[in-house]
Length: 624
Image (cartoon, rainbow, N blue to C red; front, side, top):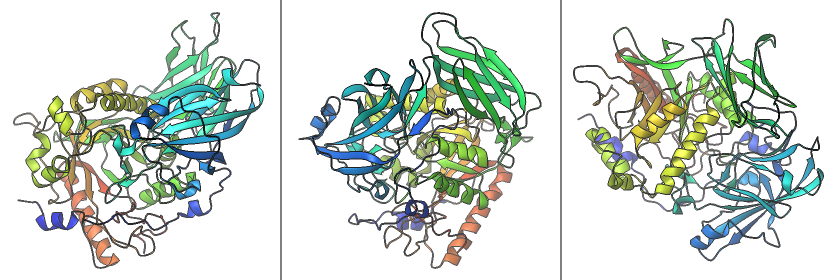
């Protein structure tokens, strides 16, 4: 038996009262300009010049209690704003976090209100003013000048609202009001690792606006969305644009210019929209493509125009696949060459901003710290970031495995933690297709399953243009898992260009391109793929998609005075030696067929002290 029972027992979370977390502040949070935080363009793959950030402390907030959870669930649709607001709030930081200036919890029977006045400056008589809310947790109703503009549900998907019909003047002030409701773990919606009852590996819940709020001005006919997919094998750039048009007459073409890094035009293309379709799709041939890789993250500039509208984007040429090597072992390949992934798990939490990074520089710090330490991949864990994070990974040359956020009903600790930890054979012997099993895996609510599918669809299609993303991870350790095989097939239809890890850890259904193993308590070795053909090799690449978690507590830079990790050490020297030994043992498995690993984790998070950096990012444990 290769299970380290002693280590399992040491890692079981101790029963303890939830203690108040120490108030840690990152260097970027300390320097935050509350009047204009995160002021860079929020959508690097589709930039217009005519936009205005609505981030900052010009917003007011109010927390209004409802008689019950059910009352709040119904009220957010049509509630009227309170007569008095509680004070200012810095958007896009949630009221629970320090950088918002509020630090108050929003409970499931509360409604969270926002209000601010915005200056509208429409450049033409028939243009549109679009309000973008890139992330609101969880349900939101939007009002402009007292008129309801629309609703949206889903913490991890953006929403856009046309304010134009509700403006009293095309150049002047307008009042925005938002009503938000967030059930957190009292609901089955997608919420990732947030919990009101936080502790151990579950983190402080947050609510409301947590990604950018911004205005954009567009002409009467405009480009609604843009997707660029490169074909590195055929030197072609596939352009797909959704367009919004007015009138039934002839429309202008959608034109594309591709320029190299020196801003020299190297390719052009255009196509006319088909009447009534609203989508333009065509390919542009790019000569002698310069391939993108982590060592050479080469980006092309792309300029797209449609009538009076124009946007700026970028693209890269690279392929990612799972292919057999000379011995028949399936390997992750970048540009058709085996590429060993050395990754870190990245939760995307910050002590002063929770799910919201304090600045673009904070994002870049983490990405470059990982690369400087010799890692080439980040697994974005149970969270979808703002697009600026993926754009940074594109520019820096950091690969990304993108998880889908989890949700569903309360997890069964026995089924999702205890049995898989102790019984290796359980990892691939539990079906996720029956109603009974789905209920046990927290996926029994049909509304949750519908939300998961729609969020997955939007995430895949919205982020597909980013070359840094090399794989989609659908389910993690069975949290809310259902129909993994059918969902894998669906994701492959949405994006056939990337390998899929269908179930990371357990319960594997034999589908997808990658077998993702979690191993915190066993000897490091390759595990057989039970779904491989008899007397044949696996059709999937094997990835150690979670392991490690070696803990080291740094006084003054930790949220609590105790540590929580999967192994403890007597000194920082012993911790570093243990880390080097563990990583070397996993590196050695490349020769036996391993395609890579994801070490837990890039930074400490709240009670967890198993990061390479402290939670406040002020101490790099590899360098002290």
